[in-house]
Length: 270
Picture 1 (cartoon, rainbow, N blue to C red):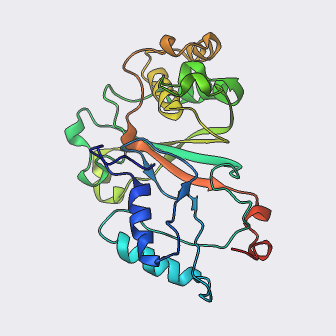
Picture 2: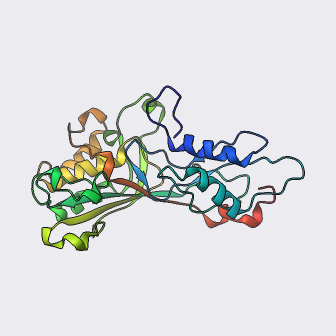
Picture 3: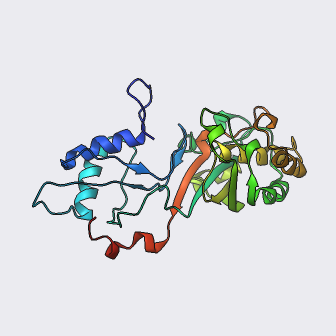
């Protein structure tokens, strides 16, 4: 999300809106982004919408023109526009979303952080302490699926009291995965796993807390039924200290929409 001038880090939204200045629209362009991610969290495919006002007599930008112009100005940054579409004026990148899918990448087999492959640094979490009991994690994960009060699984912040803690998790799977260039270090017996979570929306740091609790189950620090008990207590202060998963392993994989909401034929005004 957008950051203020006095903040040390610059948000992705700031870079996008700076790049959009090259379009020379008749009014400043604001990006409305579907999902806000914490510092250190990655996005494989986020979504945003913007309104572009052009001067009288000027034609609409084509998808190709938007991609070329924006990506040219984003080139120095790890940000790319993958596609652009005209949509109805009623579309909103955040509020029209049906669901959001996150993946959390886990790396097993590293006794120390220095053993994480250099090309995986800051792209996964390698919990120390030996192998994880994945079946126990999968058992615990099922307690989190469905509609629940996730008060225990959110971090408290200034907006927490104004936000409902009730959320719906449609899917939570834990599956083996592949690492980047992993076939070049097969001799190291490293294992990559992905926790895939799909829900309509999420509370502040909810995914990282859920993954941290599941890893704690895998390490034997919690039993599967403890996850159910944490859910039932509905108290953010009841969450065990020092088990929240770090930001680096988390990726926003995709944002899902109803195809009718993206119907370009229903967007005469752009």
